[in-house]
Length: 180
Image (cartoon, rainbow, N blue to C red):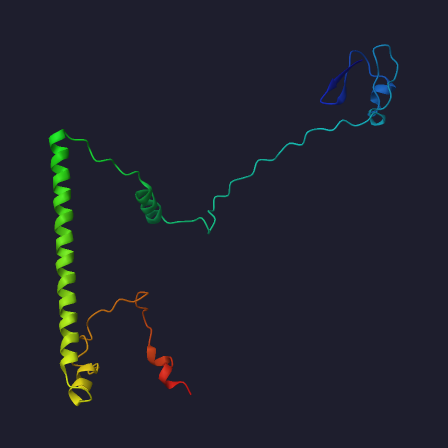
């Protein structure tokens, strides 16, 4: 009988007939026929634990789940910006001239619009100052007309913080004037 060590265990290999010692599961026999001590009497050797592989679930997590369109949009937003193709010196000079002309034109347009607004506001304020004090004319001039004819048309869309909510009816909720 020959003994071998395999992964911290004693393994028996039979060469001839098995002896009584060899039949005992807790003892081994040497080649001289002597019985070795039990494997259980020796200190145990710590074996490295095998890490189990985590199985990937086929379901995606709800928090990280996005639809196909959202993924496409994210990829489009994150796409690198393509640089402007380099042109010849003449093309680059022409592009610079066009950019400067555009900037100057937009400044002029903005300044003309702001000048027009300021002139109208100054004229309005001057006209209000020219009205006699403590008269009905000045009171009427400073009054804000809230009649339906003076307001914008009902069909005009007014910008809001959120889109319209389908089926929402304001009459089901109390208005600030109705608090009692």
